[in-house]
Amino acid sequence: MTRVTPKSLSFSQECKDCPIRHRAVCARCEADELNHLEQIKYYRSFEAGQTVVWAGDKMDFVASVVTGIATLSQTMEDGRRQMVGLLLPSDFAGRPGRETSAYDVTAATDLVMCCFRKKPFEELMFRTPHIGQRLLEMTLDELDAAREWMLLLGRKTAREKIASLICIIARRDASLQLTASDGELRFDLPLTREAMSEYLGLTLETVSRQMSALRKEGLILTEGKRQIVIPDYDLLLEETGDDSDGGFLI
Amino acid sequence: MTRVTPKSLSFSQECKDCPIRHRAVCARCEADELNHLEQIKYYRSFEAGQTVVWAGDKMDFVASVVTGIATLSQTMEDGRRQMVGLLLPSDFAGRPGRETSAYDVTAATDLVMCCFRKKPFEELMFRTPHIGQRLLEMTLDELDAAREWMLLLGRKTAREKIASLICIIARRDASLQLTASDGELRFDLPLTREAMSEYLGLTLETVSRQMSALRKEGLILTEGKRQIVIPDYDLLLEETGDDSDGGFLI
DNA sequence: AAACAACCTTGATATAGATCAAATATTATG
DNA sequence: CATAATATTTGATCTATATCAAGGTTGTTT
Image 1 (cartoon, rainbow over the protein chains, first blue to last red):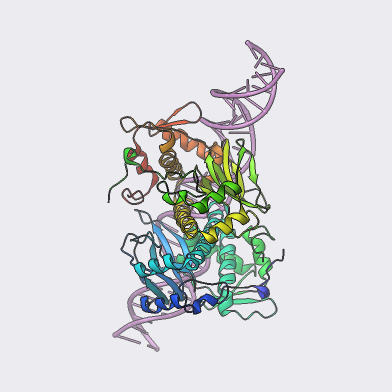
Image 2: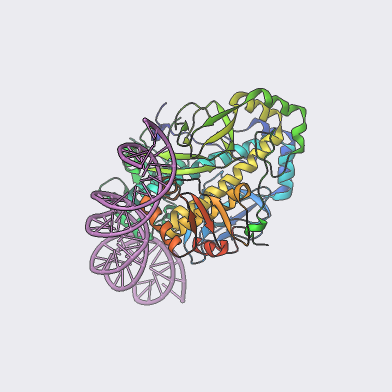
């Protein structure tokens, strides 16, 4: 069991011709069946802040994120909001076999999604078992992520929540942006304080205060409004409350 | 869109010969392939409070709950615990393609599980696409449940959390136990105050206080230590904070 | 039936994070 | 460049829930 350090992080790669993320480029995607996808897929772009679909609205497609970040949120009658999904490039949105969206889907940044009309996608899935298998694997990953998120929401302090979120973004975003030199991680925090508060089950003010606290203690540096530098990833990791060698195993 | 009232609740049925839950008894289970299951399945019983597997331990089987209730929990280094899964009869535990358990699996009540050795199960899944399809559907259901749970953990008040949990148990448990007469729901609450607190991200004392409050206001009655009566389900539902016609649609 | 153990309830107090309010950055606009 | 609009930080105060501490039930064992 080896702990992942920033330099040894490994990430999913996306196979361009396949609707769903692969751990490595998928050989099968050369196969004939998959060419059907060309006929049923199309791209949609959204500006930061735009809503892709509202909870309860008809959603006749499934989609995967090409660039940017999308969020899934639930809203209570009185306006309290909780983010329940954070979709980075290659992540999948939409549920085969459901007509309407259960969540608000929102573009957190400028966003491009690759959409597949639901009916043909479902038929394809039925004919092509490995797509279903891959989707199962991704859904199981998402379920694990949701369960780690539940621990965060239910039991972590505000400080631990913030540290956890920064580490999560650093890990997931790093493959795209980062140039790690001497163990320093530098990346864009693509969420507003409000979006962070919706992720963490906190208020925006508490997020801001805890960010300031981590900054004052030198655990993070900020450059401009959104760029974050983590001088020592392991030090920040200790603030998450997570078991220091659980969680991030290869 | 029709709101589900206690009387019209509909529940999954279990097909005895198939490892995974079906919405209705599955015709395919007569098929030859599935007879393999007879050779790879076995039953295990646990007493209330016993641990099925610890997080990190080897888990060379997948299983479905036959009777009783199992929980999945995560524990932090300092002992803070959060329940992340509640498995009722017909629910599934374990992840194909993973060697160790990511969670503590515990018997909340006396428990019987139907286990399948992982290797043969995976092979069977590979040969029999509809098992994977069914498993995908179940995993998507679980992911939805996890996301509703995240809203509860992140944004609901203690009172709303308690009301929500009672409604959730009532809905899921009802098919087994309940005799609904004049809209009154009666069932066993199968969780200790401590287990409830782990589910809800609260302390045991807060759970107890809120239960007392709901009792004093007549929203629930308790008979003995564990039996709960809900005189008016819709009234209790109003205390959950959930959108009164979202959520429970047919 | 007495004694014990496990579980639950209630009380007093402390505190983390929410709320209300304002000031300060940052970015966009005419 | 000045002005407005948006996003963030910081301060003062409040409150829901945690924490600490008894005490009460219920059920089990002998």
